[in-house]
Amino acid sequence: MAETQSRGLVFAGKKRGTGTDDFDGDDIFVAKKSMLPTMASESDPAAALANARHEFGEHGGVNMSIEASATFTVMEPETMRRMFAGELGPDRDFFIYSRHFNPTVLNLGRLMAALEGTEAAYCTASGMSAISSVLLQLCSSGGHVVASRTLYGGTHALLTHFFPRACNITTTFVDIGDLEAVKNAIVEGKTKVLYFESMSNPTLTVANIPALSRIGHEKGMTVVVDNTFAPMVLSPARLGADVVLHSISKFISGGADVIAGAVCGPASLVNSMMDLHQGALMLLGPTMNAKVAFELSERIPHLGLRMKEHCRRAMEYAIRMKKLGLKVIYPGLEDHPQHELLKSMANKEYGYGGLLCVDMETEERANRLMHHLQNYTQFGFMAVSLGYYETLMSCSGSSTSSEMNAEEKELAGISPGLVRMSIGYIGTLEQKWSQLEKALSRMQDGTLLIKN
Figure (tube, rainbow, N blue to C red):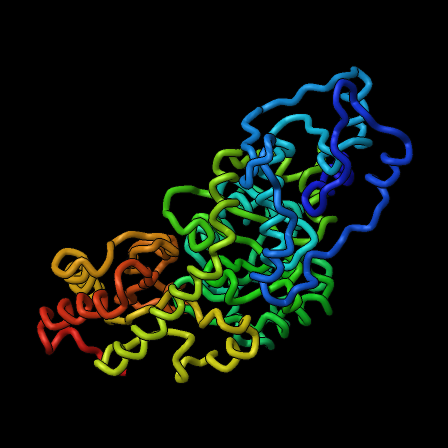
């Protein structure tokens, strides 16, 4: 059944007839055997999104209808048997239960597949559920993962603590920029996954996706990339990665009002994850609400415009802050260690990312800076997460990377005073820069500026 029904993730088949469940043998053969169309024909993600199927409303509305049903009826008893046998599925508008597939969620999956240039995509209730489900599908008990040592704290905790205890899956963490270290960490016959972030959280280290993908594939591994920090900017699947993950809650949502995730990859993987007997998504059930899927589907069309402005302002602030003497980390700056690498991989015209970091060296200085930026000048908010229209700031070592111990943070390059800023686009650039300057001037000169 999973093979048939996953087709609805990537293309539209025949619609159900009225009055009776309308199907015949030829149609079933097409649903089960036809080749999957690729979603990777467009190199620019905005062009790919524009070419994706547009879903209209039930009564001809320009926006799709929300299918809020948990369960779905059939006209004939035989139809239900055939759906459970895998002969009829969402590709031809046959649905069973929304934990399995839902029309509104499937539409968002089509958009995510177009965005990342993959065959298929499945949207989940959170970014962490997407990460954990993929890794559980690819790794069995006794399996091994090679991962970047600089990861989101929740992912690091999953790999460091939860998987070894609950699943007997172990991880070797490496400097993802050291290709020889990556090769040496791979255990032949045991390592199943090479896992890293396209742009690391929070240090903004850029991964060499083509080179890492080649290493992984030479060893028969699945290359999984979290692209949460760089939608539109980077397209890991087009650069060689097998699976692309997202916390949709961030830039793709843009509103800091929903929690959601996505798995983008080969149809064969999505099929396996929806298998009734062995599928991690099907059996663990991190189901996205159809109303959330509708909201997100309406935001993706302007993601490119939002990302361009996030990135434009981040670049301008990084340049100006560096001139003031602040220790700024931003991949768009020429002195960033992976600036040229990112430039060679990035999709044109989208910039270098919407986040920057300021290293204040100590947590006390970091907190004082954020206090003035929020409470004195209203430059932004002290809050975790990213991709919001307002600037969000956090001291990573004591917040989103707090799951890591002191040694792990040091190896990852996370300073105690590292302030991560997700640059917003509300107000004018000069208005917000003036607010930032006022906060800096309020700080005592001898303790604020930390020279590069």
